[in-house]
Length: 99
Image (cartoon, rainbow, N blue to C red; front, side, top):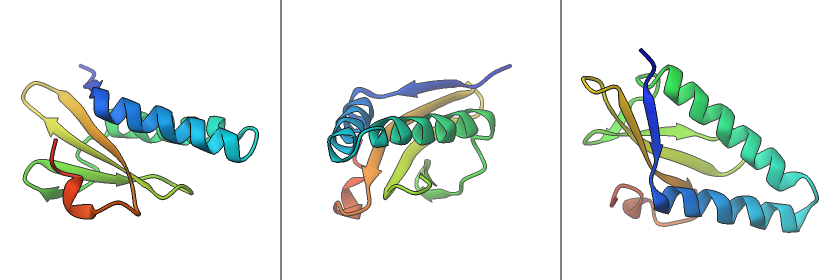
């Protein structure tokens, strides 16, 4: 059975805004960001327990090349992964678990 991955609206908005910003910086950079995030989300979906719990049930998966971390929870019994944030490293780290 495949794990279901749900991207919360706030995480989706962060993701979209970041991709658009990177694309304004350099042609193709936004697309590269999207591809790297998608690859990491696929890895999380396939191996949700790969990344350790950081606070409560929240896990953090670092994003390669870009200064972002994917914050998610995994409910093993239901096989559901909920991505609550795609969080930029310069933001206040105390706020990344507030969703």
